[in-house]
Amino acid sequence: MDQTYMKEQPVLKLIVSMALPMVISMMVSSLYNIVDSFFIARISEDAMTALSLVYPVQNLINAVMIGFGIGINAVISFYLGAQDKKMADRAATQGMLLGTIHGVGFMILGIAVMRPFLQMFTGNAQIVDYGVRYSRIAFLFATALSWQLVFEKTFQAVGRMVESMTCMMSGAIINIILDPVLIFGLGPFPKMGIEGAALATGLGQVVTLVLYLAFYFTRPLPVKIHKSCHVDHAMAGRLYAVGIPATLNMALPSLLITALNGILSAYSQVYVVVLGIYYKLQTFLYLPANGIIQGMRPLIGYNYGAGETKRVHRLFADTLYLSLGIMLFGTVFCQLFPDSLIALFSSNPETIHAGGMALRIISLGFLVSSVSITSSGALEGLGKGTPSLIISLCRYTIIII
Image (cartoon, rainbow, N blue to C red):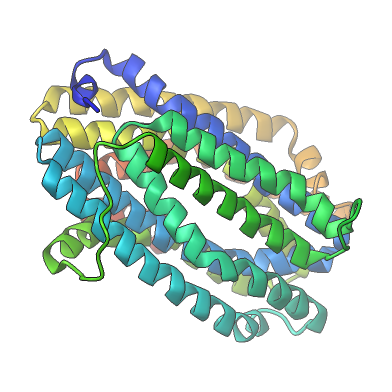
């Protein structure tokens, strides 16, 4: 229950111990993303195109929930560093209440808008049908996902990274196992096609949530989530002050993908597929890098709250070096094997050729991007959401679009 180790242990050792569980769980999540797309691509290229078009909406909903979770993480970490447990409890409680509202709202909205959204990008009735069938099931689990993320960011804020890793990995592994079983109807299970992929994702989220609840009740945290139906406007404002910019940071890639899908669909469906494949592949780099940043964020928030400014600077620098290492590996790998990576998801020679060319060019920017993602994460940990948002606006919209 004592959090003072966050300002006492050697910085690099502390970052690695906090980040390693997150990196491992993020790598498993990356594998889930790849496996999910791999099996959906086996249904048909239309199914893969549908998933590529649904992805921005799914990513937007995830961005809102994760971004708000980052607000919870930063505020709890700050109050724990300032030794104010009562305010940390209020932050966790309000986070759960507002997270529930978000989950229910997005469940309804996501199901309602999907058909007209897909029709904006394709006149292919089969692609629209695949997308609607997938999203109807996937978005039914939005509330479970929201609760899961509130617990995830609360556990991370108090340094309980191993429990968080266990929960996240378990859900992802369940998802990976259920994907082929439910898509193709293995054993006693019915063949569900693209609906099976959506159901596997939802069940994985439920498993993660159940494990968080089990840890919460059997191994108490330094903060408590109390029953509340009352919105504390002051605390909500504090959470959203970090959560809204963080949400926009994470939602901007969805805006970018949507804009690019609109541009590319005017030329060829192949390019839409290539873009979708790229965004699945890049998770193998950006999710582990994000795992390191998730380990850094509560450490920066805690040390900032405790007035340890020199450690804040050192935490940022060491995290940046680790992120650069991941991106250097990704750059080399994509330069050497671009066609082979694209061929995991398509047997179409035109798609493989176009995707290989795109991957070689895009990967040249990986190293530079590690600076922006580390800076954004550090600013969020400090509770400075607006500067973080400005960095992401430049990266995802103003310059590229």
